[in-house]
Length: 276
Length: 260
Image 1 (spheres, rainbow over the protein chains, first blue to last red):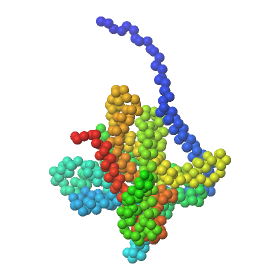
Image 2: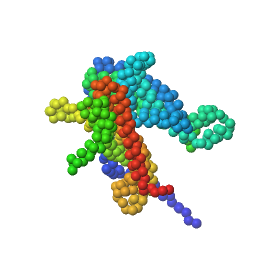
Image 3: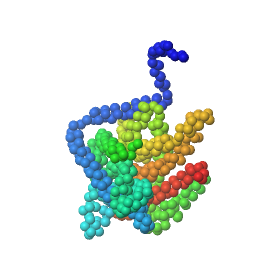
Image 4: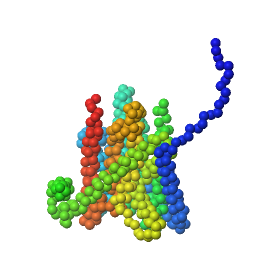
């Protein structure tokens, strides 16, 4: 029987592999240097162009614009979600006329730019002033804020209806049959069995849709709503200071990134029973 | 030859040609072509919108492809570099990106020129600014689509390329790209539709696209509802045509798959 009589003497660790200068590393360093230079330039612009008076004058306006953006998007998401329910059901209905109408609604609102829809509602419907006054709706279409809210709501309702339809369609057919076998009525089966599973599937697209809506809501600035973008344009038109746009960029990036992280955490929490 | 071609293009012009929609509605309507109506102005806007979208597409695709390549590289720094890019441009509203590019480029060129002692006021071409801003946004979204398409291609395909003795670039062009196109096409088609709609923002920096031309017509003729409705319908027509084109391209890209 043979066995080792001596242990292998301890040896020094192998030398660290030297990183070669590949093309991708050079590109990476060049691009990172470019980002760093841009960041330094932006910070220099902001520090060099710092103006206490401007900050005191436009700072509160930016905050009120931020609040208008957030409230507009929040209301539009909720109202759009309510409106998207009947559209999604109409889209899934077996009646071809109802289904066709819902399909046309979704197609029109997803196929045309939000800007065109907003102009159509604000300027287009606004030109029917006598008729609107006759039916007592003029107070609504006179205000740019209401028109912005309406166009955002109609737009997001079309997108949310598609999200909802896709999510409900993704629930396996066996779930419906299982509910029927248990003797549950259709409405109870939908509320207790289909909808919870569908909403988990729909969670990620809903998050994307809210982000898209926050970004899309900037167009209401064009029809004189003083949201974040509107206040930015106001400040720029008064000062011709490029910083105004950089501040807006910081605000928008912060909102969107915060929402994305909150949504990712929410999704991880809500789908923890599906992790294997 | 070129005269013959332009004559053919005029004859087949879908908006203002002899069999165009705007010509068929009559001579003295709001949208007839010529001095009495707004048809030719709006047709010009449609051309600008299409040109802008078509000119943006290859730049955005190429940028997005390079970003997707960088995003799956082994190098952590390269991934971080493109991560910053996509995070910024996916998080900013397109309108704000457009303003930042438009005014930022003016500022940049002016400061570079003033460093050389030239103090002139520079006006940047709105078309160029719109193209750059839309290409940047398009590239940051298309890189995501292309990246997930890259991930769908098995490693064995690259290994097979190596085993055949192909160079890395040949492997990419001959083996990976054809499959990549097939996988990424639906996503890229969606992005094309979004790009087509996003071109409407350039009207705000003064480019004569559909929205701007119909807006001018609406203001002058006081028929705002009609003209903005027309703008929506024109965008819708472009979307319908695109979806037909896209389904054709998708079928073409699957021609090698055979029946299963």
